[in-house]
Image (cartoon, rainbow, N blue to C red; front, side, top):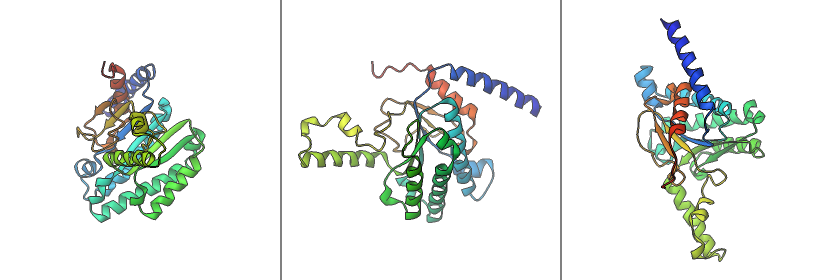
Length: 257
């Protein structure tokens, strides 16, 4: 029975992949990776929820392979929000150490260099520890000259704070006489966002069944297609990813018209 199920799954996955690759691919996907702790508790029956976080880190690297395979040019993942600092110190330290290790791994990853993928952190660098800053610098320095693919890791990130920071930069430019108040528009704010080098996400997907954006890229997601799945992040499969892209392809994007 298991063999039949695996075979059927493989056939369906191949068929779905072929269908998706024949359609319009999103150029930028943003991912809210949710459900690590619940996966550890409910699926693995583990008391140590850090197991779920560790599996979540491995899933990021797996999803990168999928995006490269489908030639999705930009990916932004929500790794650690400003709100996450309110968790227990032991969990915060574990998560930040995982992100540190992931960034070093990315900086050394042959896939990154072969595909000329730029790696960048978006978020408030003043809030992260020095060892994580070193890892950010390492990954960014090693990939700064690449522009074929972009991979953004949101750490110590808050969408509202990003908008506040952008407004402050524009206000300072007005104060310094570099621009007039009448010149302030959407473009002047957008170019001061962390993701100013990327176009806004076409698709944002969230795992774990939660139906909210949780302060993630709230300026950039104004016209993004939203996709929610009940699957927890560590259990997120290639077939789930393909279904999200197919849903995007089946929607008629009218941008308010």
